[in-house]
Length: 383
Image (tube, rainbow, N blue to C red; front, side, top):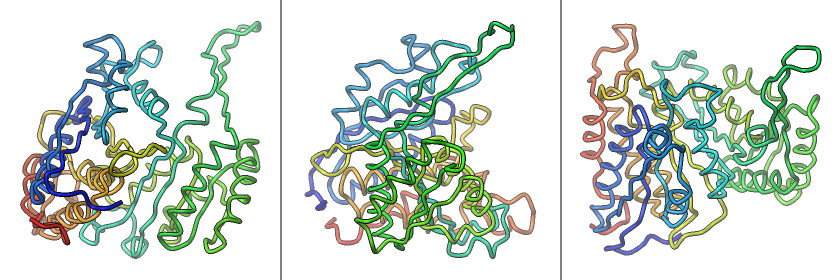
């Protein structure tokens, strides 16, 4: 996608959400506005209530008209949803229902979660430093099928008086094929290695995944494919994480494995994600962008949340949905420079005193300001 001209205005829906969501989304907005201003462009932000705030205001996790509003935008930036006041699993209305509504309503079938380890953050990871060298992987998670969207029966007493519950795990061939093809395309642009993860020794749907993946693989002879069971993958992610390039898997396994992989980077707070569909906007692929962490209500409003994951999600937004690769790289360089300069939010400061020497603690807003100061002019874009 070509870089758009100076003077362009992009329309982005901002969903601050709950907990620390408003703080990290505000931080990302600061950086995105800053990087676009250097090229004479701007964002028209449209803010909506979703999640717990929407439940309190409207009685639902998200209104149909807000889903439609997101559909008309160039992209969506999301903070996080949920909190203890809406945590009753028996409640008929829960914040996470908004996420399912957005994914299905906007056709966002592919969740991309890149995981790499910045050299300055190796000390923040619980893994041995030698295991983190050259880690650069991408988890591609199917997002609109599987057990999260299957038929279910809530716990109820059976004829014997014992409670039973049921969740089904459906997948159609077309759902598998489109996510697997995307994963192959992404692997082709990286190190040409794809790992498809399943539980084919037990699950019929996993055997379908293997069959379809093998069929799609014929279109990509330059990509090395391996099938791996989810349990062995979970083990290897902490034993040999650098062995992975692109991992593609179904909804539940992708949810779990991507959270496990997050410890490699040192903190949930620094990792970004993009949820993409097939719809093309004027500038790129429509998507929803969010950090992989939750709403962290225990630290909400304290200006200590790490905004880097949300800021890097903004960089993915620039690259995928706005077609602004140079601006995305400028944001990523600014984040990297801030970390190289020893700037840290609380989650990135090692507990061991000597390891923390020379680091500068910053709050959420100050970290965003420091990253904005380090933006400079995106390479190849006229100021």
